[in-house]
Amino acid sequence: MCEAREAMSATQSPVMKEIPPKSEDLSSWYTAVCLKAELVSYAPVRGCVVLRPYGFALWERLQAALDVRFKETGHENAYFPLLIPESLLAKEGEHIEGFAPEVAWVTQGGGETLPERLAIRPTSEVIIGTMYAQWIQSYRDLPILINQWANVMRWEKATRPFLRTLEFLWQEGHTAHATEQEAQAEAAQMLGIYREVAEGTVAVPVVVGEKSSSERFAGANHTFSLEALMPDGKALQSATSHELGQNFSRAYDITFADTDQQVKHVWTTSWGMSWRMLGAMIMVHGDDRGLRLPPKMAPIEVMIIPIVRGEEPAVLAAAQALAQELRAAGRRVRVDERDDKKPGFKFADADMRGIPVRIEVGARDLANGELVVVRRDQERGAEGTKVTVARDAIVTHLATLLNEIQASLFAQAQAQLARGLVTAEHRDDFLRLCRERAGLVEIPWCDQPACEAAVKAETSATTRNLRPLGVDQQPARCVACGEPARVRAYFAQSY
Ligand SMILES: [Zn+2]
Image (cartoon, rainbow, N blue to C red; front, top):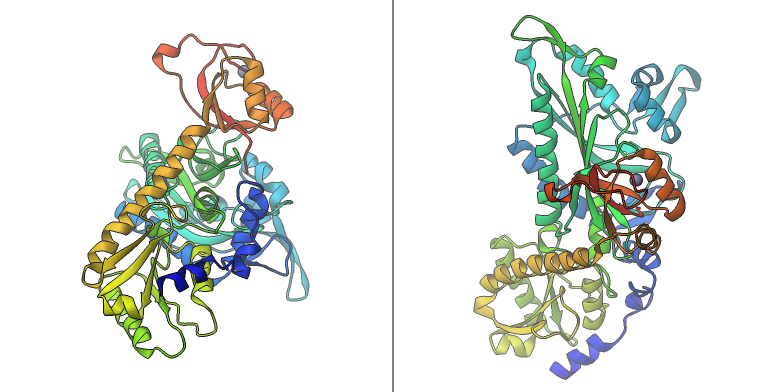
């Protein structure tokens, strides 16, 4: 029985053969995994993808982790229209200038040319700000803490599933406050929540900091971001949180009568995480066999695979009973009952989908009161990857094992990030590291757009985010241009 099982798992399934090795060609591997794991299909419209049920289930896991935290911190969900009149969009000058190249316009409706064209929202500050101006009169109406789960559209040239698509899913929070301090605290709080979800749920470690002036959100005073590092040394911006100051409240006339009777403009924030976070998860954790999902993100935590040869109804029944028991214990479980597929194929398929644990149920194991449990987070054949567990102990064993897998994937990703955090002392080294995509290259930096543009022209790298200079690091010189340094900056090429 055991030998037969080994032979079956050793058989290369057709699914696996079609995926290029991750280390050799990350880009082809990534696309192949997204398609083979049935996360997405390409749509008839260029640059758009269909989110298939397994992909949507991943999105729902991310949504749930974020949504509960938004609500815990006093936010409510609402929904605003997809279309924004051009005249409204144009009111905030920097905002429209920043987004204009990516906006898709509706110019006809009902067979007639519209008197004013309508933008398909690239983001919703404008439409939401317009409504806030109507809703807010007094300090008693503040703060307003609203989140929207929505799709947005940005007309991108090059596209990749999750990383960059014309239409994508995200959440966008929009808040209005009486004071600048409150708005600052809100933007910081949401950045903290994003970090908690990225690292604690998605198991993707990030560096957190402020965007440079050339990288910040169009219309914001301050933009803060989470940056994850991909295995090819490129950074992936995974979430942003913006202090919008009074820029939008002035443009859209959002005012309130304060406690001192003075009419003042509100202070606003916005913050968003999109399905890009799933792209980061896929790239950071995946391996040559496909996805590796952190248990907290896995739509299916445990796949039960009955090992049957011909008719063995007792094995199937035992697999079903096990699934019921695990479900009752709160596990997300499925039984792969397909009778036209061999166990070896099913093993490879569960691997491809990144399911954290598979349980093999065979007649002899059942007779012995045992189950074979295989974890996905380790390399095939590694010590402890495949263990025999007493049937009676399976519920507690899984609870511990899934926590261990969550922690182990995060630890592996942290080690990967640590290898990619590099510093440079000299200009030539710095430029070479940027060109070679060595990772997030940290230097003392002058914080000047011209310097950033020069680095970009030479290396394709830009600042990802910035943090304050340490007290002991002053005075320092910008490694890129030699001017006095004002911050420390992470430079990298980016997705
Ligand atoms: Zn410089």
